[in-house]
Every structure is written in structure tokens, then in C-alpha cells.
Length: 499
Image 1 (cartoon, rainbow, N blue to C red):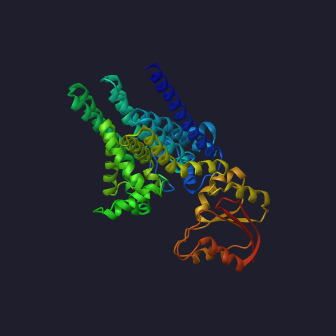
Image 2 (cartoon, rainbow, N blue to C red):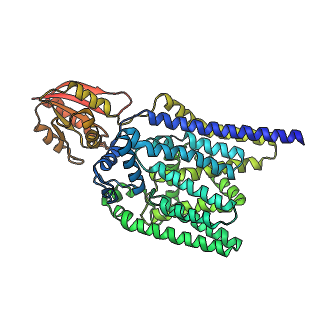
Image 3 (cartoon, rainbow, N blue to C red):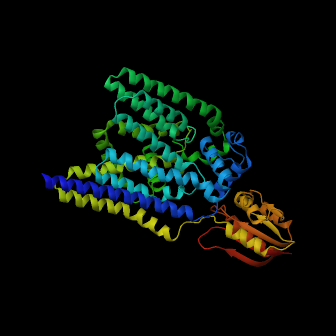
């Protein structure tokens, strides 16, 4: 008996150490990406300019000037951060880093409470090594806040379920539900889900006092959500630009089996980053739902309701079900995958065989995201890293030079312009001439002498690459003096002498 107890204690210590190691690795991946200090790219630069140029009150009037929409709490936090620490990339991305690291601990808490050891390590390891989550941990966007907000509410719900009713704790729970809605758009689905589950939990317990508090929580959360929609989200949902941008991401009416298949494939690719394991992960998902429902139906229902409400929002064309907009759902899927692994393990009677199969399957699925994350430790993604090009212009700029800025490079160019003391230099902001490329040529025909051309986030379709189109014309209009590119980035800089 003593020997068995010591073995269990040793196994528990090993499990805790392994879980801590996985969390530490996840923080390392995120910190490396954050400290790489890549330039703000198009979307980040647009929201950064809005945050710098607008007052706190003006940030509540959305869509913002660059057709951006973001939760008010997120915008206020980032603006406050930049007021204290300056307008560096690190200040703009601090919110995402903090919420990303917090999410690692939150999913570990949740998994440890409801999954077995194997499922816990598996789901947290997938979360820690997710390339999408790591990327958005250093992005001036609200999406990691969406993940943290959803997980925080689920942890609060699980805490309520574990304890006897306390009016003080449920008041805090209600206050959190009300306030968190202003920091995340997608968290409204989780707020509704945990509120309903808590009410059902107390209803099943026949605790009238607790049920009344749960109903008050739902009511006040509903009022907060209604105010948020009327004053903030309604103008965003009416934006023709945003609706057009996301039109392919809404649920068709009626939804077809083919659509569900495509949706599953797209979710696996982005944001889960686990494409290539479609059938295995689908089986783990189903097994995980069964396992979690049997062990803790309240938590399973909260996760399922969150996804159900998201689906309904997509069905009524109010919320796009694609890519970064679904980032908040990543921990939901990963928790079910972990539960599915536990379910598989429980079906195999032989302890050694169960351990071996579970380990091999987990390693097989984890190999790709983990190896990719280690590769990015050595070579992080830089994307539209415009700073080196801005520095090159500054070092080689002559008195009569002009800068032509490709329209999608405009936000990042304007953000970095004062940082390189080029704000008094002559520059031309090119127009958006998608579908009418000859208008680019008309702009160029008005230029002569030494002209710098800077390109970023170049638009391309089946018939034209706008950078190639413009450069081909420049080669006819003048002579290329020099060209500058940084390997691993998508920013191009040319200096032409135009005749």
C-alpha cells in the first residue's frame, strides 16, 4: 500500500513538472515571437494609427477611420499602454502577449480539472505550440484577448460548479460577465453559454436562491450585451466594407453537408493549424464530447453551447466563422481533443498498450506544430517588415527625391514616417486602383527625377500582380538605380530615375 502511494505521488509530481514544462515552452515560443520586434504590418498599422490619432471617446465611434473594428476595452488598454510606454511595436503588442500567456495557465487549469493526465498534457501542448496562437500573441489585434476571455469565464464557471453556492462569488461572476463583454466581441457566446449552464446546474440542484442569482446574472449580462450591440456593434455590423470582406465566411442558408465538411477542413487549417489529421481529430472530437459529457456535463454543455451560439450568429450573417474570428474556439476544440484521447485510453484494457497507443498518437499529432514552433525560435516570421526599407530610404535620400507609396503600404509607411524623420520629405500616396491598373500609370506619368517606390501587401489575382505591373512600366519610363529587399519579408523598395 505504501509503495503504491509513493508511486502515485511520484507520478503526480512528474505530471505537474511536465505540465509546467509545457507551459514554460509555450511562454518561450510567445516571448521569442514578441521580442523579434517585426514591423507593424498593414492591419496592425491601421489600428495603430487610429489609436494614436483618436481620443478615447473617438475610439468608441466605429468603424474607425481605417475601417477597423475592435472591442472598446482592448482599444482603451492599448492606448493607455502607448501613453505610458510610447508607441513602439512592443507597447502595441503587449496586450496580446499578456493575454496569450495568461491563456496558457487558464487552459491548463481547465484541462487539469476535467481531463486525465494524458489528455491534459496533450491539449495544453497543442495550445502551447499552436502556430496561430503564437503568431497572434505578438499582433496588435484583439484575438488573443478573445481566447483569454472565453477561457477565463469557463474557469470561473468550473469554480462555481466545484463549490457550494456563495452570493459573493456569483456577484463577482456576474460583474465579470458584464465587464468582459467590452473587451471581446466573441466572448458574448461564452457569456450566454456559461450563464445558461449555471442556471441549469442550480435548477437541477433545486437551489432556488442560487437559481435566482443565476437568472439575475443572465439578465444583467443580456442588458450589457444589448447596450454593447446598440452603441458599438450595430454600426460595425452595418459596415458594407466589413460585410463584403467576410461575406464568404457566413453560414449559408440552408447549411449543407458539403459546407460542414469545408468548415471542418478550414477550421483545422486555420486557426487550429492541424490540417492533415482530419479523420483522427474528428473521431477524437466525438469521443471527447462523450467523455466530457459523462464526467462533467456542465462543462461539456458550456463548450457546446458556445459553438452553437457562434454557429447561429454565422447563420444570421452577424459573425464570420473563419480564421482569426474563430481563434477563441481553439481551446474548445483542444479540450475536446484531449478528452477524446482520454476516452481512447479508457477503451484499451491493457495498461501498457493503452499508454503506448496514447503516447504514439499524441506524438504523431504534436510533431508538426511543435517542430514548426522550434524552427520559428531560430527564424521568426517577419512578414511585411517595412522598417529596414524606411531606414534605407533615410540613409540614401537626396534633396530632390520623391517617395511613391503603394496604397497597401500606406498605413505602415505613415506610422513609421516620423520615426525616420521623413515627415517633411515629399511623398505621394498611391490610390487603390484594383480593377483599373492603368490608373497607376497615370499617377506615375506625373512623376520625374529620382523617385523611390515602396511596395507592401501587394494585391494579386489571376490576371495581374500590381507590383510587377507597375515595375514593368517603370522600366519603360526610366532606369532602375537600385533595389532593396530584406530576405524573409514581403516589402520591396525601388529607386528609379524617371525621364
